[in-house]
Length: 484
Ligand code: HEM
Image (tube, rainbow, N blue to C red; front, side, top):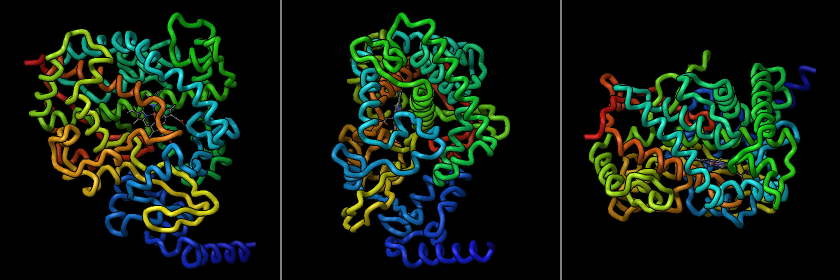
């Protein structure tokens, strides 16, 4: 038996290392042999930085797995993710993101089923739906601004996280998680964050999902499903006087009524909460967790980190926002040039989903970045790498919102900006996310001046940002004062 295993391992080693069709593509030797190379980097939360560094060392096409390439090329973005892409989602989506055959919209790989799921979601992200969500958004933001007024120093990332979870709870299930009010993280969020860490590590080896019940994480998944099921059942029982996301997902829209089953609803609620809160709060504010207790430590803000670092830009944004009437509205917020440039630049430097999203090359193979890529190869473009490549963005590591207004250094290649991905599988909540980002950012700068609290390690901040599928940054305290 041992002899058989040894013989089999040696042939896999020899094949993957020296005879595989991808053998001519460069990359670390261990990555050629096993996906455990990826898992181990994910454990340290360094995958986004490691891939960027390796591209600098090996070039634009990097072998990151036995059958997997990461490609740093703007033209590849359309080929892999664009509306007419021939590539499908890769086996990454079969990992812990799925519950057997039942999937969230995001982990659905079958094109026809995905189109049906997306049609249901599209209704909840139409311009009309987003405008209907606005009063609810404003209620939460008012509460948030009031809460800030009683503090001198706050954990801005934690506050943003609580705020965006409360908003998404209300938008998704018709009930706030009340984290801002209670000052405590909801169990839903705690479990979700543990799940995200596991997702980032285990999705590299999707077959391990069949053993998930034997791992400690298996219990978390079950608990998450139970909490989500309770939220959905309560939401279903009480109905809703307003159209929230589950209004559409539960098929309460009589014209188009959906037919999602209960587990699909549970899976989609996870996508809604991760999509709607984690990514948005990361874009706004950083969150970090202690791995054992999963307490939220002192978080900070990505966008606000850069704005506080560049006080001249903070003031410029404040001046733009103050030129406009008190009562905020999606339509005029969407047309403020500097506000939108600041948000774009924050998402460029710190895309909340920093690593490449896995796709499969069609069986006949295809030409990508000037090379012939064999059929069935797994491929991705990493937003963190492509958005910080000097060929796409001059001074790529510097926060320069002006570049989006044609007043910054060149180049500024808009096609290389992909924090929401693009195409048929790209973020369906993009407009809702941008609306949230505009409302919250403008409300904060309208009311407050922010500075780093004494003792904060400004220089060390970026390097401490970890990647657990979504970014998890270090803690930062902010001193706030009423706007001068
Ligand atoms: C700054 C905030 C956000 C960022 C950066 C972001 C990013 C992304 C990305 C990169 C994807 C593609 C994932 C993949 O291909 O595997 C995605 C998908 C998705 N996002 Fe977002 N997202 C954000 C906010 C939101 C919000 C507010 C919602 C609304 C509930 C949302 C709902 C979704 C859904 C449902 C999908 C799956 C789409 C599909 O498979 O067709 N996201 N998001």
